[in-house]
Image (tube, rainbow, N blue to C red; front, side, top):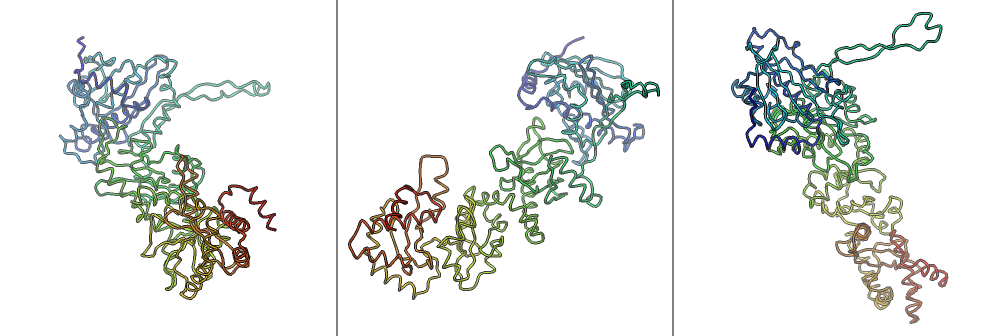
Length: 634
């Protein structure tokens, strides 16, 4: 029998297929099952118009058979089969697509569900097999043919015997090595797992004879004697796939429990999802999707190890376990899947071509998730606040990242703890503002309790204005990125201009600054210009003696966050020490300054500066010196 050679380019491609293209060897079973499904699809299509086929849809099936003794795995279908010429064209020339040709010749639409391209995927079998034998009998033919190959050396085609129409593929597996256990693909448990993972929604049954054991019934004497039961083996045919994807069912025939059960089982979560959405999009591209918002963040969600993405299917065949391109990073918490017939696939199902259709689907999914979140804010507020506790940080990172490119999409999804004790949206904050309030005020700190005690909040609270409390490291960066909301600028309560001082108080402050100019200048010099830019009379303090504020874009909180990051370069806010002229300490400062005792004034100035640092939650450079100063001045 003549051995035919693959073309030179086909040999190279086959070698690349086996060693490079597929990441996981287990993919081979998915490819062969998908090809079998294609073959059945073709014959099923003919059966709709040709009574001679003699098969109904329920007669079609794919059979898996594992023979451990002979180290072979067999995949059989009762599909359309192949002639000698088709074996030559489809299997002799790599990347020839019988499925695409069938589509074209029969003017089939995408709905015909031809999912494979018999050719490229077929050769994934050589990742696990040292020899592949294909026996096929085409519909309408009296002769069957056998195609055999041991890989790049070539193949043979010969006549053979086969009673029924269809194709039988036998893989003689490679012997196990220390690194690779090819025999695992003969284990029933492993085969079931791979079909559940990749081919569960193939629309024809995938069947297999499975061996079980059961105890042999004992006699009364054996039971009385306490004899251990003996076991016998028996086989039964099992259907290994569920065939009908949940997402392709009508919404009207599904209950909430169906969606929740699917989620907990498919995505290995002990908790029910917080929200789910069943999308059936019949436009271009057409796709079905199940999208879930978990109720709790995975333990590694905010780590580099977390891998976002949706499962991607093509007509029920898993293409990619986690397709990151279907979700923007800020919606990376979404779990679920997308199934589309319109995606372009290149050399294998494992390498998805990032084409326009995928981008259109991704954009549609992003809009769906956004609308679901907005609906939760409006109609299920408690549920949204639960979501916010788990994933709000991710949305705030989304506002700040990519130079604020997505801030307009996300700003209405943000929640902040307010001085009124509730979580509020920016829209709710602005709607509640009085006419005289110019800015959206916020305060930063490591906790709400610490922020509540900040001296800088006194004046804003006295005016009856609401303050947003920012406690996450990313918060102020996100606010700076937003800049304003509905034409209202954000303003830190530590900013030099709060926009709420009346002209009378400003005149009084100005007069006091002029009167005490020498003292304030001396205090700044005595503290040191590397610590404070200046010391001023405060317009915001009511009961507290002192506070630290900043000038410029870098705030005190941003200084803390940026300097906590890895790297040698340190940033510093332009610090301003504010003194309360109404506090009794101010009179003491004036008295010391008038006495001309610079050493004592230096101690008071540095003591107040260190107090201001402690209020801000910033580190004290020399705690021992601070303690000694307190004792000395007491």
